[in-house]
Image (tube, rainbow, N blue to C red; front, side, top):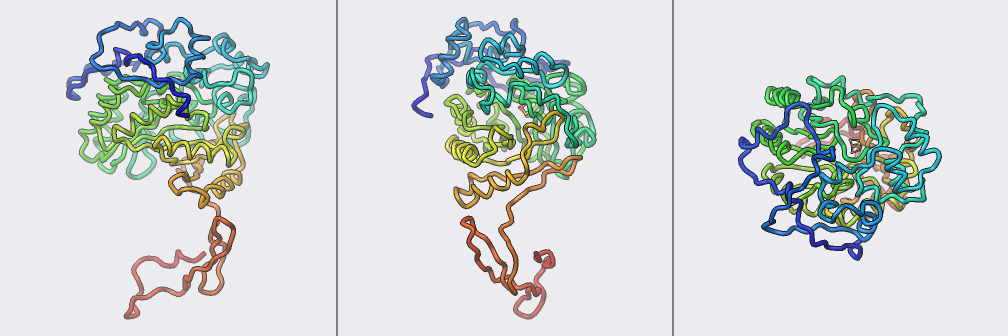
Amino acid sequence: MGREILITEEVEPPGSQTPLGTPEEFTEFVPSAPISHPTSKRSTAIVLQPARWMPRFAVSVRSRAFRRRFFPEASPVEWNDWRWQLSHRIVDMEGLDRVVRLSEDERGAILRHRGHLPLAITPYYAGLLEAGDPLQPLRRTVVPVSDEYVRAAGEAEDPLGEDGDSPVPGLVHRYPDRVLFLVTGFCSTHCRYCTRSRVVGHGGDYGLNRAQWERAIGYIEATPVVRDVLLSGGDPLTLSDEALDWLLSRLQRIPHVEFVRIGTKAPVVLPQRITPALTRMLKRYHPLWMSIHFTHPDELTPEASQACGRLADAGIPLGSQTVLLAGVNDDLETLRRLVHGLLRIRVKPYYLYQCDPIVGSSHFRTPVDRGLEIIRGLRGHTSGYAVPTYVIDAPGGGGKVPLLPDYAVGRDGDDLLLQNYHGNIYRYPDPMKEATTGNGTPLPGDLDNRSF
Ligand code: SF4
């Protein structure tokens, strides 16, 4: 990976060098309805100003060649400007046809598409796609195919039943001590298996605005059991520095909110978003955690590595959430390369999700046994830090249920029989009878649950 890096001479795009002040000073920067993103070409004008310092952006050989071939009009400064990336997203067949050779199936699926989750790919991420291979894993995650129009049994628009657990629009309160705050319905790049496809890329209840944010914040303020707020969407890091600063400052003022998490795919699909100005602002809101949505080792580019490095240097603990996807990452070798690569860029593999049964996702879903086999192939064979927790988000609102291969394989009298990662059986003395203290008093706690 390192050999690929070109260090460019470009300065950080001037508009992203926002001076920071107190949270109050930025209240007026929170946009009124709707919360906008810099997607129109008009918003890309950059006024060059002298930069006081010169942060550098990593650009891979591949990205540079892609820019020169398909976006020759874009200067390196523009390419490294996340707002330029957003305003030049590929959103239709003509745009995509220019950079990859579309198959008939892809072409038909794009033309047929209406409604939720339209095509959207940043130029940066488009540069990672294989032009001649419709089965390339990254390409399968972002380019529609006709299988999306197959509705299989058990699929639903909102399989996790999030809307049923929303006390106010945009806020999901399912678990006792934490809430999910859907702060935007906007993503820079649309994943074809997105659990929130009902939210992403269109308005409805999720065309969020300041009044809706205020209602959600009001609910959190009035609910003292909430100690953990997860900002998600859509992708919160597609909001401006000012809007994020305002939001985080409001949450920081709530005494019972102990920490905030941000769920994002920006370091993967829009690494230019992770500017020094952003990380300087974010580090004012510790404890702040971040879950990054990585899918495949081919996403571990110099750009993504630098983005994660900047976040880690800002003291933000990073975890990766990966969805297990058929034909994309559902084999041990691919996931091994991913988890090892993640640790190298300071991201802890956190969750491996079984793909949720959203409408049109059957071509992405794998048997649960496949996921268990992969976990069995990782656990013990590599560092514990590299092994994510494999979970199914139980349809209907059951929450995350962890799945683990069965390593406790039986009992023999007072011995528990354990199978290690090589498949060898070991005994652990674990008497079934209730344990006692030295004077015969039962130990505290419910020991009945220790039977297998
Ligand atoms: S980044 Fe997340 S929310 Fe956005 S389209 Fe992908 S899966 Fe959906």
